[in-house]
Image 1: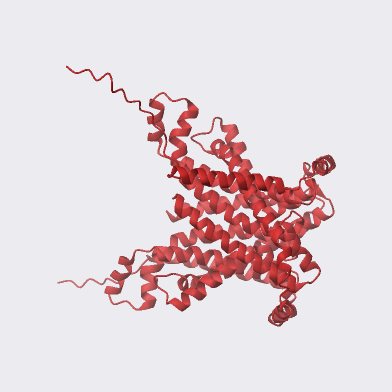
Image 2: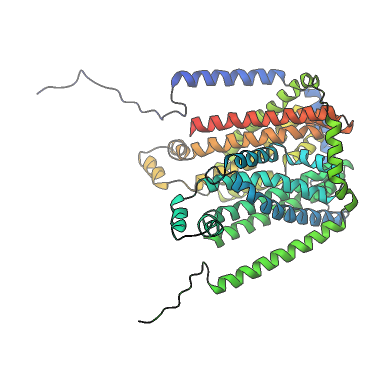
Length: 270
Length: 266
């Protein structure tokens, strides 16, 4: 009988770390800490100004807590109608225009030159925030909701085309070959093999983009491209915080409705 | 033998009629909205648009290349706004998401509060938060950082609490069975399941925040938006085109960076 009392092994289990190699982890951690310290030092924060601002804003923020739906109701309705119509039209245009770009940007079905051109358009559309694009369109075609429609359309193209292209690149090629084997032509191939595979996700993306476009339509009004943003900006400029908070509450309400709508659509898809 | 008349259709007739009604409604709505927008548009300006665009591009060239040096500090500020804003948002989102998820929330009232926070944060865009914060705190980078983080809390918390609600409860039970405390159960059973997607979400939000940080300066919240505002108000288009090029480069570099991080962590 051998008693294994000398070889006592201590077991201690540790969760595996995110970054496996210990040295790499330490280096990344130190670099990150250095970055944070450097950044905090370079932040020029004036505590006095903050305290002054807080005391001033107490005066205004009393108004903020008493939302006033009544005095500016007409402007609010006008702005919301403009925003909603802008959102709908821009999303429809965006969907229509993004489909060819999505097919062009899908590596598995598109020739190289078309691929590169499509990807370039998508990158330009996605890199600039909606407000920057809105400034451009306002300079070119003037103030008003049409600039907003063009802005939202242009920024939707990049978003939808990129995600749709990724979806197309992930399709099950076997289904396409199966349909090809029945002797289908290219349009029939698209309708019966490719579209059915990408349609559910595409509808989800379109509804998501509707939501994003509505929120963006509120913002581009700040530079003059129409929508509830112009009303909101006017309220802030006039220090009418009660109207401003009413507008924000209406906006939040519409986004909530939009969320109900999108979960309804998602249930219908299943 | 009987001849069977099969004509294969992708969808049945009832479904086709439903879809046609749906399409008709959509097209009617489109025409209705188009009329509203068209009534508020100055069409001569729109037709003029292409010509104006060419004139604008002509005014942008030659670009004011030396201006690039003046933009280095604002670009650094922009990156700071995005990074610190995202980090602050991540920290808060952890709390909010755990309160908002059905299976980890301590109390239904707290859950509703967390959901309210998420909806409010999501519905109001960063730029609007920035307007509010510049009024409170004055112009500067701090307003931008807080604005970005207020918006990002909603985004990250929503995705995080949805993934918390989808975890495998068996793992939670297993850890509970070892006698772990409530907090330890969270750490060892919930967190490992949601952590990969959480990191992906955080990096994705940082990427979006880089874009948003470029424009919060337009309302005074620091970053390159301040120079952009100045250039546009002063109609200094050779400066503006340099700013656009810098923004494009910043976004491209940050996309490469975030793609690399996501590849290495997932």
